[in-house]
Image (cartoon, rainbow, N blue to C red):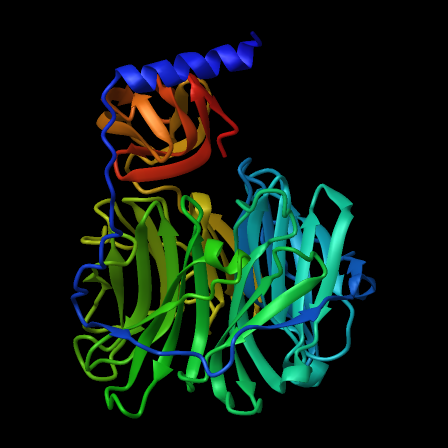
Length: 542
C-alpha cells in the first residue's frame, strides 16, 4: 500500500473513532456605530470600467540636482513632499519642483542612511504642471507612486502609475491610463495605498483614490470620489470606479490595513442636504473582493455640526485612525481631532489631538502602529508631533519638530509622516520653498508584529516587538477553522516578556484534513493564513 493511501486510511479511522462536532457560524452584524457616524446606503450609478495601460517610461530621466540634508534646496520652489520607507529603513521621497508658473515636475530622491544623505534619482519631463506626488512601499524592494496630471493631459484625467526599486533602476516603469473614454476630467491630488497579498499577481499594486469630475451619462458630477486599481487577471489593464452620489468631495487619503486587506479611504465632503458644513466621507472595503469583481463598499459620514476638513487615515491590525482639522470648539477656529476604531470600523470614538484655544492647528498627517500612532500638524509656521499609546483616546504633549521657528509652509500636503516616525515637509527658511526631513521616532510603547505564519509539523508564528519598550505578559492564541480539525483547533498562551528588537515563536500542534484558515492573535494584533491540513502537516500556508 502506498504511503499516501496508508495515511488516508489512518486519518479516516481517527474520524470514525473520535467524536467530531460540526458547527455553523453566521457573520456577525456590524455593531451600532456611535460618535457622529452615519452609515449611508448608496449604490453607484455605474459599475467599474476598464481600460489598458500606455507606456510613459520615456518621460522619466535621471536627476542631476544635488541633494543632501535638507533634501532639496535649489532656487526653484519645492513643495508637496511625500515619503515612504521600506522594511530596512531606506527612504524614498517625492516632491513637486516648480521651475516656473507653467512648468512643474515630480522629483524622486532616495536615502539609504536613515535620512542623513539623499541621492538624486529621477524627475518627470512631460510638459505642463504635474503636482501632488504620492508613494507607498509595496514590498520586495518595490515602491509604487502616482501624481496629479497636467489639466490638459487627457483632460486632466490621466492616471499615472510609477513603480521602481531605487537600488535597481532597470525595474523602472511609468504607465498611464486614459479615462477620457468615460468622460472623466480634472483629477485632483491622488493618494495610493499598496497591498501585495494577491498570490502570484505581482502587478496588483493596491488602490489609488482621488476626486475627478465626470460627464459620463447618468454618472456625471463635479469632484466625485474615485478609485483606481489594477486588474487581477491582466497586468496591462486597470479599473476606475467613481461615485457620483457624493459630489463636492476633496482631499482624498487612503490606507490599507496590510494585516487583512481592508481599505479605508476618506474625503471631506459638502452635502447640502445635511446642512452641517463639510463632513468626513469614509469608504470601507475588503480589497480581496475586488480581485474577483465582487464590488462592495460601505460608506459612512463622520462629523457633526463642525466643519471637518483635510483628513488623513492610517490603519494597522484592525485599529483605524482618521485625523482632520475641525472647528470643534469655536466656529472657524481650527483644531485637530481623531476618529478612532479598534474593531475594523464597526464602532468609533473621537478625541481632540490638539486644541490650543489661541491658535489654529492645521493639516494633520498620521502613521499607525496598532495600539499606538503618531500625528503631526502645523501651527503658525511650525510643525508639531504628538503620540498616542492607548489607541487614540489620549495624546502626548506636542513637541515642535522644525528647529527654525515659523519656517514650515502652511499649505495642504506640505507635511507628511510615514512609518518609523520619518517626517518630510516644505520649508521656507531660505526665502523659497525647500524640502526638509527629520525623524520624530516611535511612540513610547511596545509595537507587536506577527511577522509570519508557517506550516510543517503543525503551525507556528513568528512575533516581534518593533517598539521602544518591552512587551510584558502578552496573550496569544492560534485558531484553526475550516476542514476537519481533530486536534489543535485552538491554542493559547502568554509571551512573558519581549524586548524591543526581539522575536519569539508560538506554536500549535494539529491533526486534521482539508483546507483551513489559521488565525493568529497576539495582544490586539491579528493575522490570518490559509492552507491545507493533511494529518499533522500544515501545507502551503500563505
